[in-house]
Image 1 (cartoon, rainbow, N blue to C red):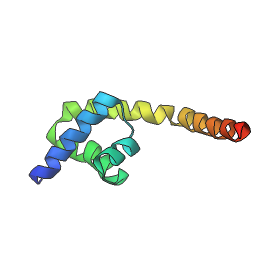
Image 2: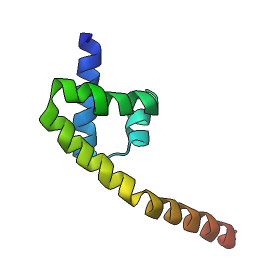
Image 3: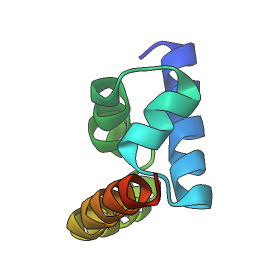
Length: 85
């Protein structure tokens, strides 16, 4: 694995752990695709640092479990915004 990829993988993992960020948020922050973030933190990170990969997986699993709640909140905000206008 190239050095810059390994560095990006570790930076992504640290960012996700520090901020509890979603894959989408991390992709925006690092200006890469969601697919790249996902591959980095699931496959590549496991090769580099399995313990860190496990911690990141727990954060991502938590985000996935909360996904339906965030979607509902976004829809609620959308319609509240429409009513105010």
